[in-house]
Amino acid sequence: MCDYPSPYDDIDCKALSQRECAQYAECALKHYNSDEKHKIKYEFISGITSCDMLDEKGCFSHVNFTAKGYGQNSAELFFAEIRDDHGNLEPTCVVSLEGIKKVGGLCDSRYDNKIYRDEGLPIDAQHCYACDRKLKHPKNGELYVMGHVAVSDYYHG
Image (cartoon, rainbow, N blue to C red; front, top):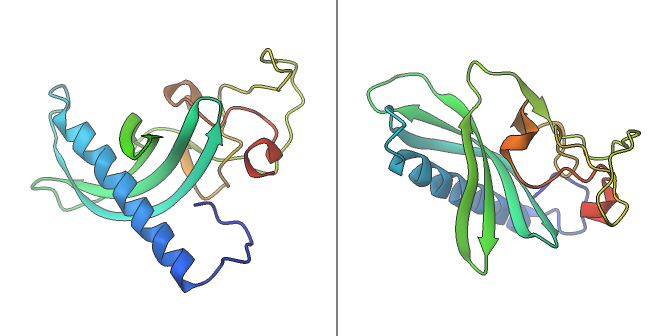
């Protein structure tokens, strides 16, 4: 869940958000570790923050979490995008943000370029407009699917 003022901003909502964040992160890490091209396998440390979004492509979540490589002492920051297909969580992007350029989300920002999708929505393929600045993304926005409609109320009403 994103960090927006809400009438549901209570301890139960925060606990649910933390559980979802950890669930998304563990799903992403399992997917990452199962890919044979990744030489280092990681173990989950903690979920940091996540943001849920919905559009015609489905339900997606962006998540930041920390993990450490087996036998290593230092933690790395990760970004993942998860698609929720009726309770079946499918990672679409899992990437370590260590040593690469990263950017925060641009929720509540407006976009003034003229790239439009068929519905007349401004699209910025390099940034996420669904997440706030605390949630870090890879600088290459083409690695993940959601968040590119450059009007924040598209995601949050």
